[in-house]
Image: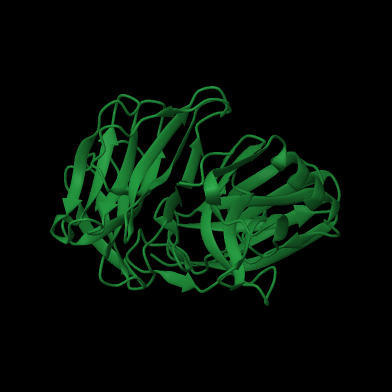
Length: 379
């Protein structure tokens, strides 16, 4: 537990030992308070932490960060005119030496830099929003040259986006006040309001998410019915959101960031809180497998799609699983899965880049069970 003058907003572990955590140091003045970015690194699984923020400008608050490896990373920091209004700006910075020094990739005097995500050192996405509209849209920019140039891509009807990730070609997930999905590289977005899958009386405002593999998604957020009644929650799904389990809840505590590596998960929250669980994946998969009651093939999502879509299915018995794609005339065009599998829920990300626009059939066979559904590829 750190001092209550620290607010930790995001955490990322690259492996079980090397990780980073970031947030703000709250600086108190006689009539107001300011925030200064705090960035820490651990190389021993979180037992000790080293500060990496000494070169950041004073009174710039934390926005978002990401590390590809122990040396290469990015961070966004913002000055919302906390001390001098004329100095307001948003900055996106990059390090190639583990945080010892930082170079500016993008700077703007009006927008606030929110979430960003780099697929590699060359290609990345960043969201920017206006200081003057707390719940207005965010604007998406893309780079393909290591951040030297940024091109406007689209607009999302969400407040300042806190997290964005790209998990397959052209498919982006984003979390702000809403949860949003784009299947055309950020040009168009579909958004959902407050998350109500668990409790319609206490709606969960999303804060962060992580995906351990193609099947399991971890979403943290905060449920509240009044300003003083806040409850941090960890929600988990292994079937693209069809079913969710409430894995953890803490009353009077807000959750801000989550990172999952292997079986281990870390969560940061209010008042400098850092939580970890060494076997969260094992526990989740055991509960999910025990809940499988039958065979089932779900409708792919998104549908229509271009070029990729996710197919989820569950099996109640061990057996040879075959998942195939057929054209409308019944000719098999692809075999996606053909192997022995144990009882459980599974997910397959189907890429139709090499197929023509049209209607296709996907079919699941397990022992004596057979089920088919239609999917539509639009290019």
